[in-house]
Image 1: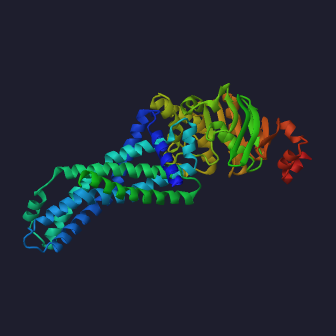
Image 2: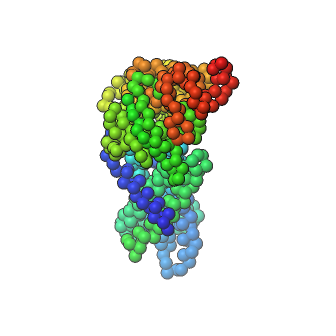
Length: 247
Length: 248
């Protein structure tokens, strides 16, 4: 318990250190743009692949389970839409991003720590945590929602293609179901979750990487811890936000 | 000039530095020698603020570094150049970007001025056409030279080098030693070098400090070091056949 509290305290101080005045705003801005490009281009492929297949599978499984003649077939479309918007596009995609981006951040910072690159920044008089971590957090806060919106569209498109090719329903039924009883707040809710997840993934992974101590083995351990803690935090945040905003 | 006054440092119950006092003179190559695990690197890390001392003061030209907070230390740190044992070059950048990096952070120079300064520094370390090389493409000696170029980019007043010759062949070690001496003389820098390479001591040592078991056990010039009757220092320096032969 004491160890956990010590870690939380250390994490809070680490977070406080990020928001010191930047040495040079233009350098931070350039670094943020670079991080955004790396995150977006590096993740768009996997997000597109997972989202479209998830959407297709959700649609076909929903159709398979909807055997009640009183439920219209167009319900498959709105089940797919709401599943993608409320849960899959934000939570599942962010769990995938925790594995991809979280481990990459932790191993990058961990390697910089063990090869004394972070010490070199400190000696130059640069706030190393601010310079290395803040651009990553800002980039994630901006890029993750875009990736999640893309995921929503591709998931629904995947559901549409899945239903049509499997002969579950007609194109018109699917289009009718997708716009039926649409609640715009669901998108807002999903984006609120995404922003929280983005902060959790980047800050926890950065913390793990930044405080790596040792050599290559410890860099690997930090990377693993970053993914495990980020995923756990995503699930906890998912539960809390759902309770607070939807219950 | 850097003055280290009665500093002590402990890790848990283990005393690593015990009441160490030294004065490093401007324009001299000050060598800190001693066996592995005797406190040389901890001393250097305390001096540059990577570790906090438990007791004592470190003064950079009369400015007490130990009592300063992170913000107050910034201007002093911008006067410090550091060459790490492994180079600590940023591997996401190429050679030129590494040298330009401190200028981008702390000056308002134009891009042309920064490139001109980077070229000057790279010329100084005999790497005139290496600007676009990636860090992974550099040999150990080249990495050290790029690290020196980056360290002198902002015209530092104090240059710290931690084991600059480790892992290098004798010829490259000699080149690095000569380079450090030349830079120190030309720019009148206060240079502090941690080493246990006796060739460096003989070639560039002007002021030599011997650290043993966390304490300063000896201090003197190159002439003194070869004729000292300090038993621990003699055991350290003349442990190899080559040095024994030199003494004879």
